[in-house]
Image 1: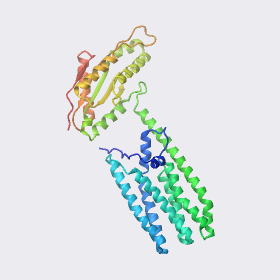
Image 2: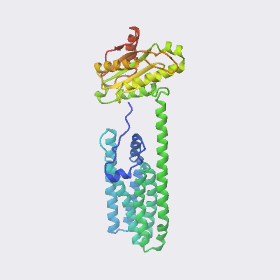
Image 3: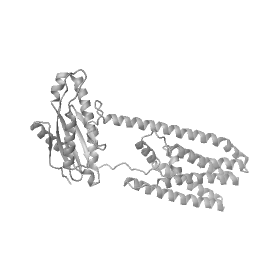
Length: 386
C-alpha cells in the first residue's frame, strides 16, 4: 500500500508567512508542494552543514583565537539543532502531525547569518587564507541556498543577503585592500541569485499548474464536467486505503438511465448529449459538496458518498431519482422528455474494502433494480472485508 505524501504545517508567524508567500493565485495544493520542497533535497542540506562546520574548523585550527572557536561551536550547535528540527518535521509530516515549520525557517536564517558572520570576522582580521576559505565557501553556500529553497523566493533573498551582506561590510573595513573587490562583486551576485530564484520559482509554479490541469483533464468527463472512470476509481481506491475506520462508512451509488437509447435514437446524438449534460447537473445538484459524481460511460453514472448509512444512502438515491426524472425541455424538441433512472447501492462497512468487489456489488444491485422494471433503488448487503 503506497504511503500518502508528507504534509507540512504552513508557517504561522508573520515573518515566516511573508518569507514563504508565493502569491494569492497559487492553489493550496501547489503551495503545500512548494512548502514541502523546503524540507527536501537532503544531500544539499547535509552538504551545507558539513561544509560550514569543516570551514569553521579549519579556520579555528589555523587561527586558534576565541572568535573563531566560538564561531565553530555555534556552527556545530546550530547544525545539530537544524538537523533535529528537520528530522522531527519529516517524521511528523509522514504521520499527519504538526511540523516545526516556523522554527525550521528561522534556523535557516540563523545558519545563513552565521555563514555571513564567519566571512565578516575573517575579513576584519585581515587574514587572507581564512578570508579566502570563508569567502569561497560563502559563495558556494549562496548557490545551494538558491537551488534548495526555490519554493520560497523571498526566503532565498533573505538568506543570501544574510550570507553575502556581511562580506560587503567586511570588505569595506578590512585592513586588506584586495578584499574591496568583494564589495563590488557581491551586490551583482546577490541580484543575479535573487532574480534566478524568482524566475526558477515562476517556472516551477507554471509547470505544477500545467500538471495539475492535465491531471484534472485526465480525470474529468469532457461532456458533463463530472469525474470520469479514472477519477471515481482513484477516489474509491483512496477510500479503500484510508487508515481511519470511520472513513469506510460510505455508499457507492451505481446509476443507469432507463430508456435513454430510445430517446437518443429518436432525437439524435446532439440531443442525447444535451440530455446527459442536464442529467449530470441534476445529479450534482442532488449531492452534498463532499460527494463525488462521475460519468463512467454512455448513460451510466456513479456517486461516492461518505459518512452514509443505509437510510441516508437510500434517501440520497430517492432524491437523485426525483430530480433526474423531472421532465426535460430541449431546444428544437416540442415535447418534454421524461427519462427514468435505476440505482444500485453498495454500502461499505469494514476496513480496507476491495474496489472491484465494491463496484461489482453495486452493479449487481443495479441489475436487480433494472430487472424489477427500473425507476427504483436496490441495495445490496454491506460489503465487509475487515
